[in-house]
Image (cartoon, rainbow, N blue to C red; front, side):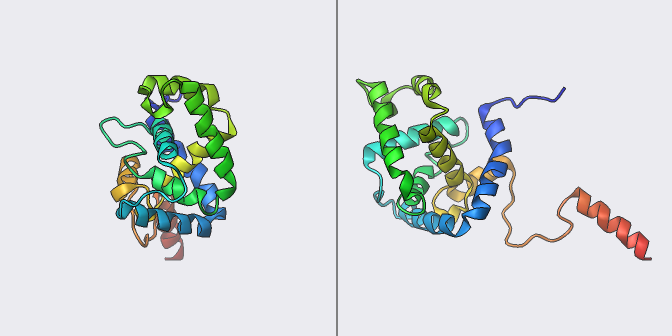
Length: 193
């Protein structure tokens, strides 16, 4: 029997690269443009361009539900909202009405408080009510993109998300890349001798 991940963070770190990698391969140029804009805004601590302060606070709280802070920083501290702001003003602008409506809905459900003012556990209870909605699905995806994109693109502050999953950032990788490549190289070196 296989061992189950110990925490939600363990599960997310093990699945994030598969989910995001496929999508990023087909939307790379737009993703990088949005990410570059996000990095500049975060570096300058600029106001967000496409989200209101309330929307940003709600999205930051949701992002921290996806990738919660513990002894390590959560998604909001790593800059995921800056990435979301840039993406929703660029290549994912068609989702902006859905996102605004979802934020409004969460605040309505949280009334009389705003969603971001609730305790973490209260937020979790509300997220469970909408976790299969298109709104949450898209915010979840944007959170992962914001976390695992290049730090130069707004999220993943100082490469912290990469460090958490053991990713070593290099400009160029030399073969052999993994165990299977090393074995192949050994077998072919012997065959050609």
